[in-house]
Length: 341
Image (cartoon, rainbow, N blue to C red; front, side):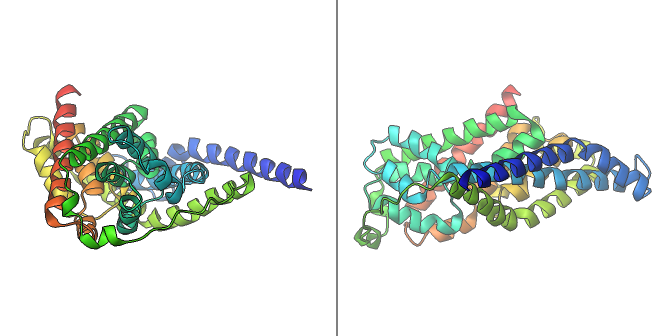
């Protein structure tokens, strides 16, 4: 009986994956046909370029999200927040920073969960710097950011973002740990008692596949509107913004473009799904890669709402240090890639 169910699931999986690849490979032709044949638009017009961009990118990004979020949902079944806490507890600094930054990629996290995660980590012996490496890596270098970058820009840009995001999380966490700022954590945090996490039995593979389906429903269900809105903004930039304007404002020649991009990104509250389509349009109009990466990282990793949330457990000197160290790392990344690419 179990083998029959497994065979049926495997057959459905193969059929769905085949349909996914067929749809993905024909998106360009379908978007061109819809824009110029069905809607009757004239090639070369600003509106036509914006519409074709929109009808191509929306299904492309959503298809990528569904596939990768499902796969990462399965991977995440091996790394619950409780297991992550146990892995990091008692780790030495630097080695712990590396491990925390890597675990941040596959561990469920959002700004709203920053406070309980922070409390759970520091009260079970995870060093402060290691905790911050995780808090920086988890929202900045996540599966949504990586899959969108991979699908829209290719593996080189995705690899650059992954490497620099992890490096910022590693170095920033190490610096915060070296500064010995534990006194700037609110006193009540260390008084919280957290019992040991239960050693639950590992899930079966059918349960892991269910985690993947749940991840698609939860994550794609939450971010699809951000995707559509971000692509709509990107379509407007793609169709109407002159290329020369972006070169003058966000090009390599404008030395001030990187810090301005970081300052602009901090007050914005968005996730990778909403900001990456805008990034794609900016790059297409001549903005420099380093400047655009700095803008994206500041939006995702240095959001003002996260600072407000963290104020519940941190005093302002530590919050400002956290923002300052991460911002310095983002600035360095922006200038570095503007110089070498």
